[in-house]
Amino acid sequence: MKSIRTALEERKEQLLKIKKEKEKALKNVPAGHLRICQRGEKVQYYHRTDPKDFNGVYIPQKSIGMAHKLAQKDYDEKVLVSVDKELYALDKYLTVSPSIPAEEIYSRLQAERRKLICPIIESQEEFVANWENVEYTGKDFDVFAPKLYTAKGERVRSKSEVIIADSLNREGVPYRYECPIYVEGWGTVYPDFTMLNVKERKEVYWEHLGMMDDLEYVEKALEKINIYAQNNILPGINFILTYETAKAPLNQKIVQLMIEQYLV
Image: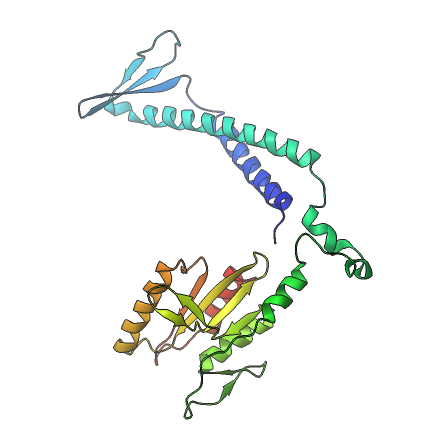
């Protein structure tokens, strides 16, 4: 889990980059500011250079580029003010905050000392172990179903699921195969894989749609995906979808990219 300090240091780097870009952009800009006046459906632009002159000089359409430059200048100046204020606040926090967050103190203690302590938050190792030790009952296999097994010795339903399971295992991603969950509007469903994003301590689901050339299968799969969405299980957030047809099998590189993007 990313610490607050780490997140704020990353935010500071982002703000410093923005500050550098905006300071550079503001070096060669026209003096003054833009005033916009709307009369009915017509919009007029004025260039103000004298604070005492509220109206400014009218900018004709042929000189609209000046209006763009002034609008961008005004925006960049406001961004820079906001960035400077946030950087000031971040620097104050980072100066006085402890280098080791309270949540990380336990993991830095000696193993024998940790045995005597009840920490304020589970260590990552304990969290993962407790997650993996949850007992559940998956779906039964049909008597005629092919006998396919992962590197961990788990039985799955397709060669593509073997690829996904073994890829997860290689990357050290904790997962459960066909662990039941309840979703409103459907009832109990069995996602192909329920995985743990260890860094964020959140569950992510993976459905592999292996018969996308079967119209009846596709219609049922789309209905299921919509039900997932209604239960806040959303692709790109906590839901991974992969697909294949008879002519376009699952690409192992895509599986690896999904794992790297959402799970490690």
